[in-house]
Image (cartoon, rainbow, N blue to C red):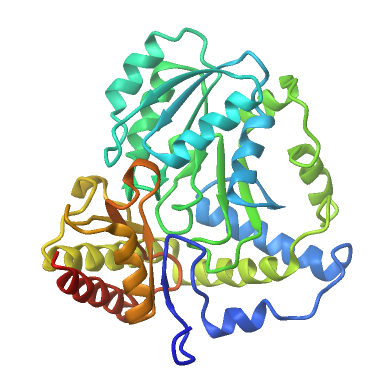
Length: 366
């Protein structure tokens, strides 16, 4: 904090929370084996299906987004299975690493940082693979601000294989459209700390009939992340293990608000604030990392001038303006900065962040 004021937290998650949600997560605990929890879980399950545009099963797991990704893998893939990993950045790489850790035979299809996956290259790769059991990839690569062309990728995968589609949507779900049923997505993995206006702590997954068929054949060891346990307990209105209740309260609140607002309106709102951010960056004379057509609606990645020390830039913005921006990761460290605009975000938050970035660059000579 500076002078008692909360920082303007503009990283790509965890997101800042409005006062009403902060009060909600401070609510008293309830019996997670009692009727109050069962009623809450029932409402949340129905609303999550609405947001994902699916009739598939959905589950809430006390875990991080990485836990959701691991859930997708351990329930559908067996050691030795052929898996295609499509990666455009850090989190695509993570999905691949999870599949490899559980013994999958992974074929890598990597794209240059800042670029989206090319559906035709995916098509060519699948044609050369033979029996591909699953394709794992990230919808929205928050490390580069790139949104992959999800519908097109799903279409190609369906046309060229019987592979399961396992999707990391940690930084897109709730802020960008994911038509699970229409696009044939088998497992979606996401988490509470992004567009859902909630603290970290709850992972969410969708699970199709095809995924269940794969689950029946999977020989991968699993226990905590075994979706069968979540399905069995869902039938009696309970979690199999102790849930993170404060985060469940927040997600219930957010899901109800999103459904009441209308999910198309929610997506349009995220698009509008993303456009505002992109326009603001360009007005500073800065260039986006991705092509405009693949720019994310939840996080914007902006190139720093070559003569600017990225680490010093972030530190000055924090010190002088009480604004916390995201930096680059791995090979992009010091070369870009990122502005998160998902969940609870107002135009003034973005304007303050952009002004802080612009003034800092001018002082630094950028």
